Image 1 (cartoon, one colour):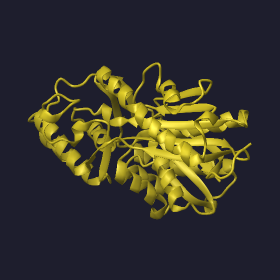
Image 2 (tube, helix red, strand yellow):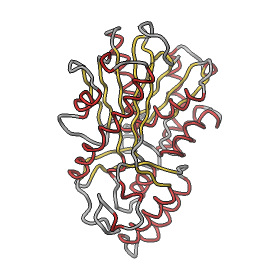
Image 3 (cartoon, one colour):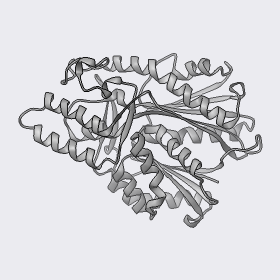
Length: 369
């Protein structure tokens, strides 16, 4: 029994700021927090990252990022040093308040796109790495969407940018075991909740790249319904050697802290082609059989590395760059944003390959046909 993707939906928070406005916000924080010794280094690095990040706009559940006067802040303290800095508890309270509405919007759109009623959903797979609470978002989403109380729920947490691939794989395995299953996958990430104010390069990179968003997908057996997009042929994952420290995500006293090493693009450049060859072998197809590539846009250098390693054309990664430009990196939700744009544009007659990357350093891939 092949699993088929029948519906996609995306949603964004109400607050949005241009990257230029974000730059001005962070410059003010640098002015307030930098010492004489690190001010010039922090300013130069901040300006350099913004210039080359490939992002025009990002979205957030925090209104403060759209403000130019700290007296108008509602989440952060009313000063540019952001002291006292919000605690992890305060950030998780906002996650609990804002994440479910965003998840609900994306899920409703995906169900409508699939032509599936909420009462038909048998399994819910909820993916996030930016918040946690209990009774969890999966339970609240059951109530919000009017799903049956018997719906079987799975929460995939703290897997970062490749979380959507694990959700897809879980859906495929569920349908393999139960051909009558209808699986709703929801990815919700509120990355901006974890804005950090130290002036280390890896922190500045994270502050400049990540935004908030939600995406959802509906899967069922390919011979159980009419329509749909494509069947899941296979998925594949691999942890690259000696790269555990290149991408990290830790729970701190003041939100979750991220480490993004400058070596990530080099690792992907060295390992990407072998990984894709393994994925295509599992799918029993050749690179020439692929008509569309959905690459998670972790950042412009990551997209460059994948393009060059796999031997893709710039056109193959154009939609990935467009999602990065319009929304930033929304962690696990981002790959489904790119996939939706691919289907909206038309994905050709050949196979479709999805690629994602995250802590490990882990590479994830899937082939849709």
